[in-house]
Length: 209
Image (spheres, rainbow, N blue to C red):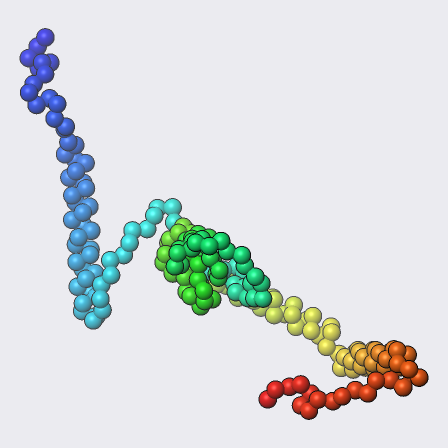
C-alpha cells in the first residue's frame, strides 16, 4: 500500500466543494445588494420597505374569477356545525368557509378580502402577479365585445317591436283579469247564497313607509 492510499488522521472529515459554495456566496451577495438598493429607493420615496417573499417555481399567474362570487347562496339556510369544530377563524364553522386555507369568516366582506389576499393566493398556487396582456390579446377582446354587442342588438331588434309588445301586454292583462274573475267566482260558490266574502282593505295596503 502506497503512502497516498493510506488513511490519514483527517480522512474522516467532510470535504467541501469550493466552486459550489463560491457560487452560493456570490448569489447571496447579489441578493443583499438588490435588497439594499430597494431599501434605498423606498426610503427616498418616503415609503416603508417590505421584503418580498420568494415565489414557488411552480406558481401560476393570478387570473380573474370566471364566475361571479355568490355570497348569498346560504341565506335562509341552517348549518349544523359540531361543537369545537373551529377555534376562532381556524377550522370549519358557521359562516363562509375557505377550504384551501381552512378558515371560516362570519362576514362576506372579510371572506372576499381573504380571497384576494396573499395568503389565499399562495395556498392556491398563484404568484399574485397578473399577466400583462399583449396587443393581439387586447384586439381580440375588443373584437369579441363588439361582436357580442352586435348580437345583443340584433336580438333586441327581433323582439322590440312596438306593435308586438302592445299585443303581448294586452294578452297578459287579459289573462290577469280572467284569473281574478275566476277567483271571485270560486269565492262566491264557497259562501252561502253566493254572496261572497267581504274583503277588508288595510290602510297603506300593508306597506310600511
